[in-house]
Structure formats: structure tokens, C-alpha cells
Length: 198
Image (cartoon, rainbow, N blue to C red; front, top):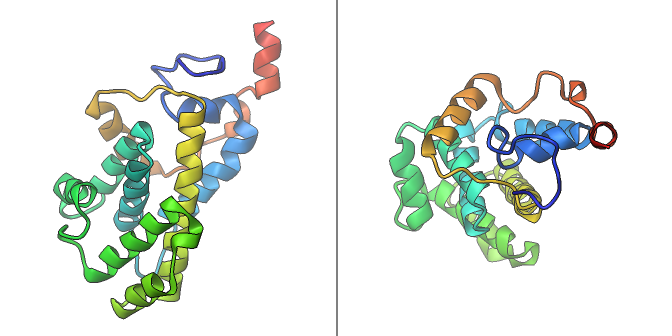
């Protein structure tokens, strides 16, 4: 059960979904950020690769909901599917990814520890593996954003379902519709929800 009363059934709205519905005013820019980082057209990084970076960082942060969600989202959009996602979680150094993506995962892991852990050597190694400045920028921002998303989910103590099918269904929705909600302002705000509960 979440640390605060979200005014909804957490089993129907697990993880980040409950807080997003609780506070649609903040949900809108957060969803826009996720849509831009993970799904917007990109010259070189696919949505699956960007989701893989998000899943990897979420795993390093031990955020069960975000790791399971974005692992499923990555698997649904990568040719090698769940097998590759599992390889990256187990050991990115031996995973069947390009040298460039491996170097970008190294940058993401450094961001997860601390922004100051991103060294000139890591950036040079990524460039040496073929990464562009845009890819390095976006990797750093995805990793930093997912540290925030992970802490949002875990800081409120939200529910993370055990059933993998929940995440697979969410993956199909994200692949088809993206992160933007149809109309987040149609959901009652926190103050409206609190007023209704009193």
C-alpha cells in the first residue's frame, strides 16, 4: 500500500500510474518527458535501445516496478526481445549489444551512481565506440530522469505487481499509444480528490 492515500485501487493503477492519476498537474510534464526521451524520433537510438537504458538504470536502482515495466517495453521493441534485456541486466559487458550501446550503458551506470562519476574517459570510450554527442547527451538525460522516476515510485511506496503479464500488457499499450495520456486534466487533482474524500 502506498505511503499516502492515492484515492484509487492500486491494483488497477500500480507503480507510477497511481501517483500520476493522483497529481495530473505533474503527470503531464513527466509523461511528456518520457515520451520525448524514449519514443520521439531519434536519428540513431531506437525506442527499444532507449527503453533498455531506462530498464538498466531502473534495475541498478532496484526499482521493481520501473525495472519490470521498462524491461517489458524494451523487449517489445527489440529484435532479440526479452533474451537481450535479460543479458543486459545480468552483465552488459557480455551482452549481445553493439560496442556503442555497451559504452552508453556504461555512461548510464555512472550517472546512476552519481553524475560526477561520468568521466572524460567514459565519454571518450563512448565516442571511440561510435557514439555521437547527441547519444551521449540523451543517455545521460535518460539515466538521470529514471533515477528521478525510480525514486518517485519507490519514495511513495507504490505497488509493483508480481505478474509479468501486467507489464507485458502495459508494453503493448505503450508501443501503440506512447506515454501521453488522453487527457490527464480529466482526472481529479490531488486537492479535488482530497475534497471528495472529506
